[in-house]
Length: 350
Image (cartoon, rainbow, N blue to C red; front, top):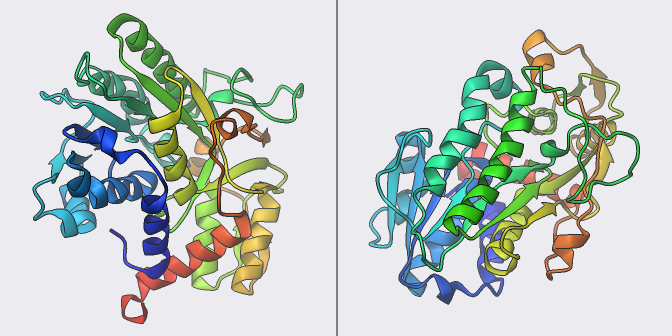
């Protein structure tokens, strides 16, 4: 668990939502990618209610040190355990429900580890799908991405779940987009051939208090500059028009779909009033930090990892029809994120 009042508030808000936790009673639940921005909060939520509702949570990551740092509060409990494991290797055990969030998620990772980017979304996914308890009452959740839509062909204003934009597959950057697409197809294959019940949240661009220090996404770089009280560096004209989502809303959507989504379906997930240009996002953070926006050319590694999509707005009609709505607007979410990161950097001030 991350320190800070904001993170604790986010955690408690999700826990207090009326999920039918009793349906997990007696089951074994795995979170793969438990140390990531979304995975860590999801793991905290599940771990905090697991003993009360009688289910067991396993938090999995390649990094044992991060696991121990984040989840030491639960280490003495009988309903929680840590598992140091690479998702690209077979698990050798089964689980009733699995959340797959283990993936490279930002430009430097896409450019510096393109093989790992693809394998986690395909080979790693196959390992996890084959580790489901066949014939059980659990569910598999594969967290996909707005990136599967590729570039807007100019024929729609928003992407609904049936849209298929353009992706140039013969590029380094395409490894993330295409592997997420293959991952969704693999879920469909396991659903048909092995009767695995699954659901796919397609997440928009994420930000939040559990953001990692090494995150190289443009939004994360802006947030770091705001936290340091420095000018926000924009490495383009900033006309890219994207949907964003606060991390707590993303976790809320994932759990909502786990319990209430229709099996075999994909659902777009984005935040409350969170469709803005990159320049508008930078200006919001400059306003929050009392600085200004400056322009700078990206280096070659950053350029190789950047999305080529100029407009990627998600239509969330489908998930809203199931009863889910986001709670945190973009400006509020950015303020909460910067405030929480300040608390992490100065724990005595909490």
